Length: 233
Ligand code: ADP
Image 1 (cartoon, helix red, strand yellow):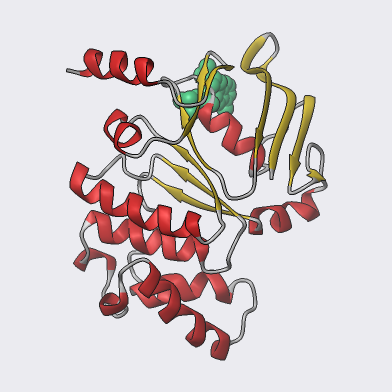
Image 2 (image 1 turned 180 degrees about the vertical axis):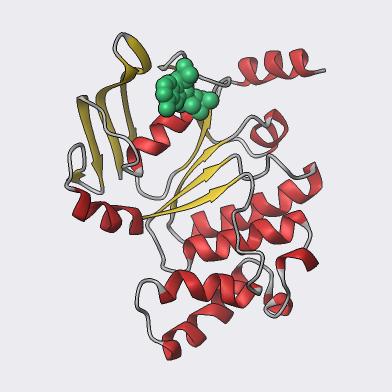
C-alpha cells in the first residue's frame, strides 16, 4: 500500500530530513510513526501527500509510483489519503453535518448521496446526535471525531493521523483510538504519528521509529517503550 525505497529528503543541501528510508506498509495495517521532534515524521507524511518532493529514492502508493507527479495529478493522490491533525482543523462556522458535507461538495458529490452518506459516517464516529451542533458546542474529543468523519467520508484507502490525540486527555484519547481501530478494521490502512507512550503501550501495534531521518526501529519493542516511559516520569 505504502512503499518507500531508499528515500532521502533534503530541504537544504547536505541536511537530511530523511536519510535512505525504506519501508513497506501493507493494506489494512495500523502503524505508529514515532520519534522525537525533528526526527522526520512530518517529512514522511508530507512526501506521501505530495506537499514536498524528494530527489532521491522512490515512493509508491497502492502500486503506483508517485515519486514524481505533475501538479495536475496531486489532487487525485490526496483523495487517496484522508488526514487528521492534532489541532482538528474543522470549520468553526459550519455545523458538524456541514463540515462533513463540505468535504463531499468540493468533490462534486450530489446532495442525495451526501444525505445518504453522512448519517452512516456520523454513526461510525459516534456523533449521530451532534449533526446540528457547531464546533464551539463540542468537546475536543468530539471535534476530533468530526475531523475523522470528514477525513473518511470519501472512503480513502489510507488515513494519516498526525498526533490525533496530542490535544486530548488520556480517556478521550482512548475513545478516539477506538474509532480509529474501527475504521482500520473496515480495511483502511492507518499511519499515525504519535508521542503517546501510554497509547502505544495500551494498544500495541507496529512502530516505525525515526531518529535523525533514519528508521531505527520497525516493530513493537517493549523494552524501548518502557525505557521511554521511565524518562517521562
Ligand atoms: P518531525 O515531524 O519528526 O518533528 P520533521 O519532518 O518536521 O520532523 O523535520 C525533520 C528535519 O527536517 C528537521 O531537522 C527539521 O528541522 C527539518 N525541516 C523540516 N521542515 C523543513 C523546512 N520546511 N525547511 C528546512 N528544514 C526543514
